Length: 67
Image (spheres, rainbow, N blue to C red):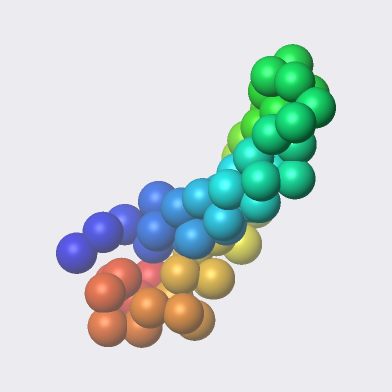
């Protein structure tokens, strides 16, 4: 079983990073890295507030432990 905080962070961060890469692939690496930094900052905030654990428990009820 994966910890709920990590599962929720992955659920949020991976699609956001893929979308940013697709949207910004022609704009240069610096803009993508800026977007990635903002995504990491946002996911970090959500992790600290406990929202990622709630998201993981809602989407993956059998794979993450109930807290």
